[in-house]
Length: 174
Image 1 (cartoon, rainbow, N blue to C red):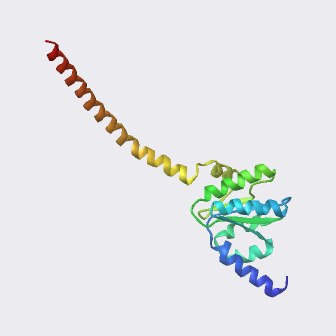
Image 2: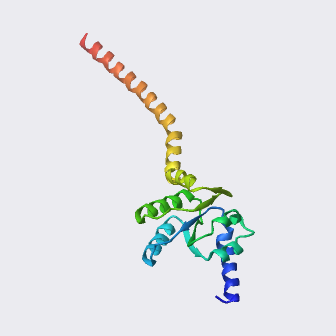
Image 3: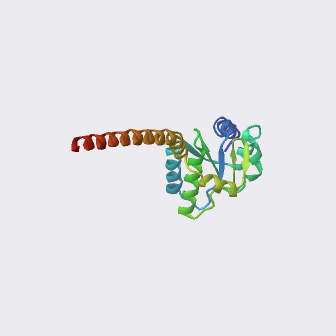
């Protein structure tokens, strides 16, 4: 790469990866083009992206950004997986599942909401339920007391009707 291309790459990295708060550094050693394309497709489904970077240019581009704390982890063959949306757990699940499928290390390090995480913390994050599952559970927990109250009130009315029916049958039989 000549100097102009390097400057352009630094600018592009700064505009894209440098602006995100949630990102993971992935070692893509051993992956071929088909596998990396498959990973990109899976990440796009979760509103995530994967960008293969040159370590020296990435360190230069991210020196003033949110990912500056990850500078020491830009070693070896590095790609940055990041989320454009709010579902960082979905991106983490995709990376973990892909790493298990292809027998590679899932992540070197990561940044979640401005905090550096280790590979162990990444595993905990990837084990969390997805955003949709958490919303569904919260809605169920909010709906459950109301449903229970409606069932109890229905039971009272049903029992009252049964008692009235029994009283009516008793009066008719007398």
